[in-house]
Length: 113
Picture 1: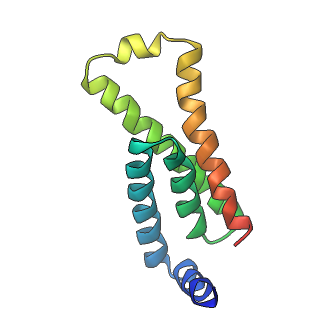
Picture 2: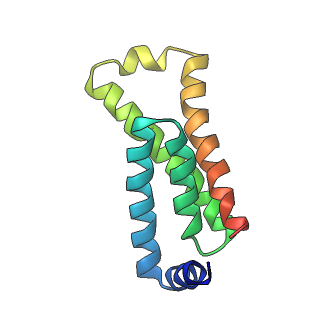
């Protein structure tokens, strides 16, 4: 476990490596979310782990959730259903809240590791 902690400490201290880790975590999280909703937790955890501190990790998790929702909304818009999607009311709120909330929950792993 000490090898992983040393690697995380090195990534967290280098800005370039941290940005690369955030990008990689976002890509892996989006790919996992495409398959199952657990991907929101995974993506949030990955971007949270490479963040400098727990506060930035939580913000990165929320940011990942917003990016995941924006990708979904972009896919809906590309298929011509954005107006109908915007008028769905509570389902619209759920489709925004679920990725953001789960990614924020996943990013809390930064406070543990």
